[in-house]
Image 1 (tube, rainbow, N blue to C red):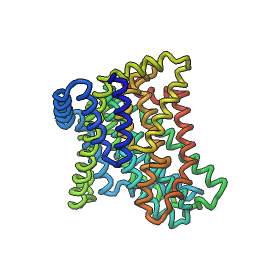
Image 2: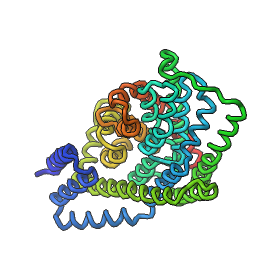
Image 3: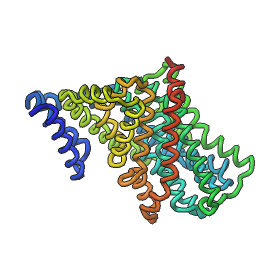
Image 4: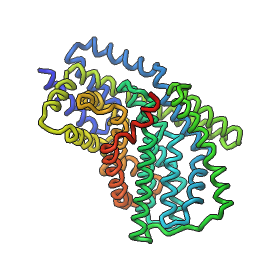
Length: 434
């Protein structure tokens, strides 16, 4: 069989195994191994698996992932998420829809020390949902706010998705982190505007909470945001100034959060053990996803598919923004069924060469890709953030959460359109770094 037929069969088998609920990492590794072995030899396939697995699990660059993940788990167990929410609540909780807007602000702030969309959604769900329900917020608005706000955890640095994208495409992780700051703020503002419009049209969705006095606001800000700002400035400032590599920045961030937790006696021994265990589990899962995707990527590369797709798409009599739109739609559809990390790793071997041929900035496209995969994390049928919030809320029907999602979907689409029209929003800070 020709390589083209083999790669088509490989994708069909890949989809069938996905539907069987076999773990995504093992599916990509198995199909990649079998396809590569068929096109080259079984000996080469076995050697490929051994070399790639060893290379990834022993890579110094990839150690940035567990460092940033641990940083987020320590922050959660020391109660930073609750402090951030309290600070945002004291500032704007008295406005109509203010608690929901405060949740979005807290999600953005927690994303600055977390890096995971599902972890941000789960953490803020535990903190914010009881308060919004206590003040008679609509279940659909409350749960949708938390699920959508979780996306900010993947966009505002540090971000696991940016680390994986940077390694897979050989782009600067430091520049990707900087590129995510302004788009993250833009999306945060769009979410808050969406909440304001919704509650303006229907005040029953988000009643106003009690108003805090000036002293309470100052106390909440000084106790809830100071440490987050300091840690964020240390990590991102060190990257921007060239003091740290991404791995060193992750280690510095984790050590900073740990020192703050110990100095303030806000981390119990059980919390420390749990944070290490959760970090190990999540990091192992991510490493296996990367390994499976690399093996599958070897199969795609040896088949010649990226070259063929790039040549075919480049020869289409269509404007490049139309081709970009088709690519983004495919990424969005895949994101509805798969985790964002899996979408990145599965599509980059094909999509990235095409984007480079079209002449788009790779750093800018990394931001766009993270936003689009985030969109898939909240849309049916398998919006992972929605299921995370569903698990936290427990007694809120799944369809109620999905009904509340659509205004936020519109905000994300507007964000993507703005970033496409004004790419400088994403590339300005990386340009300064260069």
